[in-house]
Amino acid sequence: MKSLILAVLGLGLLTGAARAQAQDPSGTYLSESGETRVRIARCGQAYCGTIVSVQGDAKDVNNPDATQKGRSLVGVQMISDIRPSGDGFTGQLYNYKDGRTYSGKMTFAGKSMQLSGCVLGGLICRSQLWAKLN
Image (cartoon, rainbow, N blue to C red; front, top):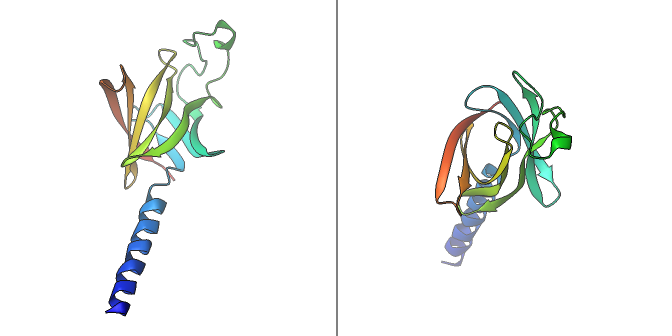
């Protein structure tokens, strides 16, 4: 009986470790439109997502800060303070197309990331499915 309990506990620990590893959001993702590639990596205690390539006008022309409007979008931290929450992650999402920052939710399944930007405390959200490249 004692060995059965130890086996069940061991299996639980292994399952928990596998689940924690599966929840690592690190990698490079391609936006649903195919226009933007973002690399998610550790940033201190959280994760962040930095733009690595953009098609079309690659300047931050919609940034509300006039001094940032001429900067290149490549290198901009588009996703910040990503932290585990429930069955996914939460953080802040910068939308360079409208210059606004939104509350964000991310869930991961296989080679994809469901990314949702929300307003009004999560009442209204718009979602996209991004493909993991590596």
